[in-house]
Image 1 (cartoon, rainbow, N blue to C red):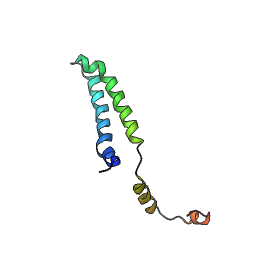
Image 2 (tube, one colour):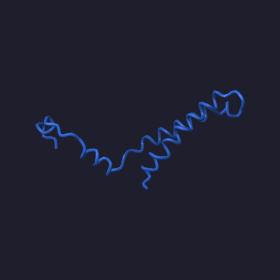
Image 3 (cartoon, rainbow, N blue to C red):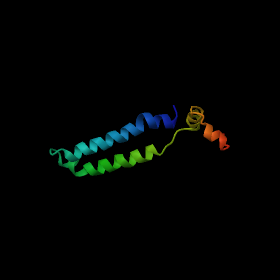
Image 4 (cartoon, rainbow, N blue to C red):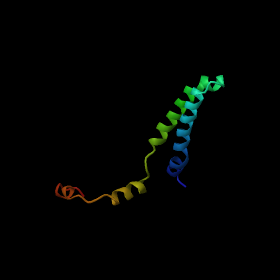
Length: 81
């Protein structure tokens, strides 16, 4: 399993979950510790999400996307391959 697959299956959903838990921690009134650090938890999840979304698809995935692209006649007339 490559790092990109691990990123898509585990890291991105984990960072989204951390952001959601931070929102819950910020809005709950029972635990002062969670309320105090709720915004910090949200920001940590947001930073993790930004980092994980900037990890793009691998070269094989990009080649498959190019192969699945529909041929456009206007691309051919302009000399594009």
